[in-house]
Length: 210
Image (cartoon, rainbow, N blue to C red):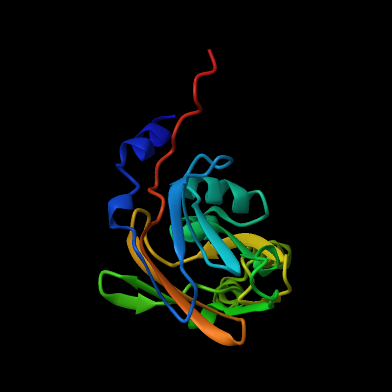
């Protein structure tokens, strides 16, 4: 696949610029590379008690996914052009034998997206719901959309995890920094991942199997 070759050559993965800053947490680790299943770039940050991975979704994938769930082409296009990532968030505090397992809580309304000097936050289920009501998107499509998106806020017990789409409301190919925050071990933790990149709007061809 051409896009995978470009990823490995560094054209779409500015790993040299990826840095994680943290406060009020144990050592924060960052991994980036190509996700084994999606075959697309990922960014993953982890500490003693949590791990969080973002995997690019190509706009063409998002278009097809939501059109198959009843969205009109223009509405599916709006989502596809808004920088979608598959997200996996885990409470791994049970795996560390040096600490007592702790619940994890987060609220996407507290997260900060910075791109070209402009600050915003992830676009949540509630933000989209207002648009879909105005656009008169059919109810079945709205329900499918809500279940596809990552919850705005949630609490995880030790070993709990969840996955879903997170939308950052940026153009394809945009690069941004993401400040995340979560509560665990009785305190608020913050970490900033720098240099995440939205997937470009391309249509790669299937790899030759011959």
